[in-house]
Length: 210
Image 1 (cartoon, rainbow, N blue to C red):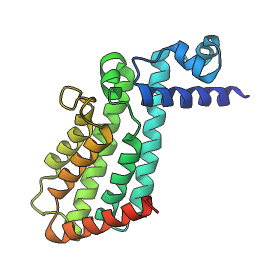
Image 2: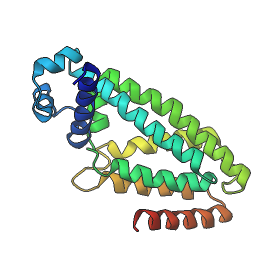
Image 3: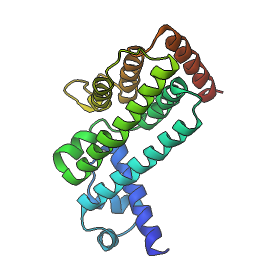
C-alpha cells in the first residue's frame, strides 16, 4: 500500500471513530487498534493526535462542502435547496456524537479553528445567498435582515451540541437539528414559500423512503 493510501486510510478511520465516539475519548492506541496498524505507523504519517484531529476535521468539512455544493447546483429553487439540505443534515447527524464540537473547542484549538472558519465563511455565505434568492423568488419575507438571519442560523447549527442545553440523555442530535432547522425556515417563509416548502419536504421524504 502506497504512503498516500495509508495516510488516507488513517484519516478516514480516525474520522469515523471521532464521529461515533467523540474526540476526547479516542486515543492513538484506539486508532491504531481500529485500523490494525502500529502506533509507529500513525506517527510516521502524523505528528500527534492533534494533527490527526485537525486533518480529519478538514476532510469531513471538505466532504460536507462538496455535498452542499452539489445540492446548490442541482436544486430548482431556494426552497428545493433547503429541503435537500434538511435531508443531508439529518443523514450527517444521525450517528454523530453530540460531544464532537465541545471536544474540538476545549481540547483541539487547531481543529476548532477549521470549524469556525467553515462556519463563518462557507455556511454564512451560503445562507445569505439562499436568503437573497428566496426573497427574489417570493418565497421569503422581503423585510428579513440577512445578517441577523444568517447569524441566527449559524448559532442554531452549533446549539444542539451544547449538552447543557440539550443533554444527550434526553435529546437525539439529529432530531434537535431538524426541529431547529424547520423553526428557522418557517420563520422566513411567505404563504407561497410555506406551500412550496411543504411540497418539497414531502417529495424528499418520498425519495428517501422508497
